Image 1: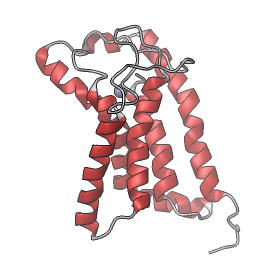
Image 2 (image 1 turned 180 degrees about the vertical axis):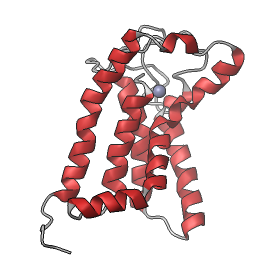
Image 3 (image 1 turned 180 degrees about the horizontal axis):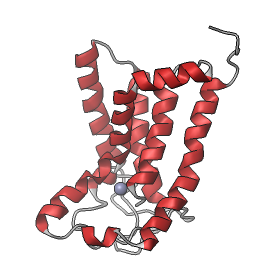
Length: 190
Ligand SMILES: [Zn+2]
C-alpha cells in the first residue's frame, strides 16, 4: 500500500476535478476554499479502505486484517451507495455523477494498492471480488511498499523515500486536475 501521502494526493486531484468550477486561477483558489470540507471528505474517501487497520490496532497485530474485504470493488460499491444515499438525504438530491465520483475516489485506493510492491502474503488485493476471491497485483508496481510491522516502524528512511515516490507520481495529478479546470477559460471572463 502507498502511505496516506499518495492516497491523499489522488483524493485531492479527483476532488478538484469533481468539485471545482472551470474558472480563472484566482477564482479557482477562492472556490477551493469554499469546498474545503467536501475536499477533506474526498481525502478521507481515498484513504477509507485502510480502515481495516483499526481491528489490527486493537488486536495488537497491525496487518492482521489489512488488504482483505475493504480493498475490494464490492466493498467500494456498497460504501459508495451508502454515502450517495446519505448525500441525497442531506442535500435533497444526488446525481449519478456524484455516485461515480464517490466510487472513483474509493476505487482509486484499490488501484494505488494494486500498483504497490507487496512482499507479505497474500500478495496484492482481491481486485475482482465479489466475482473472484483471488489476490491480484499489477505486473508493474510503481509505489514502494511501506515497512510497518507496527506503528513504531513507520518512522524510518525507507518510508520517507516511499512517500517521496508517491508525491512524485501523484502530485502531478493535482496539477493536471487544476490545469483541466483552467483550460479554455477566457482570462477576461468574469
Ligand atoms: Zn490500502
